[in-house]
Length: 107
Image 1 (cartoon, rainbow, N blue to C red):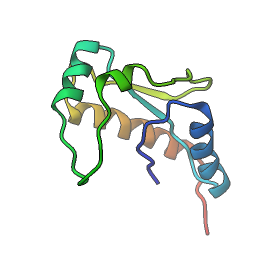
Image 2: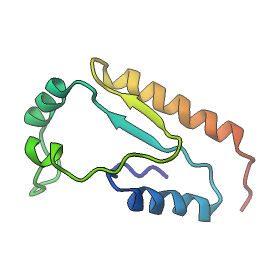
Image 3: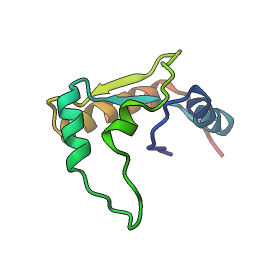
Image 4: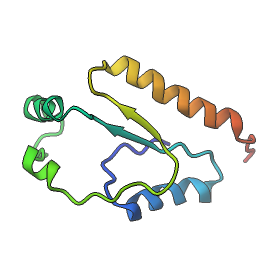
């Protein structure tokens, strides 16, 4: 299972992690960041929505949202100056490392 969403609060990150733990499956937590604020703002201003009627947040809403720093290990992908394919390769490698390290589960 992949849950792709903004998780700025520890309570939501904990809830997603608990789902995997209860299911007895390996967990890889990934934080995606863009360390270049100019590039990040450009991306926000130029993105399009693929779900009709879904409002996208403004740059002001993004930079002013509540954010709680992570308090545990996670895989961090910095997308600044990188293409999607390279970032995806890094994430898949991180997921694969966790899956290989975890014991197999039989239903």
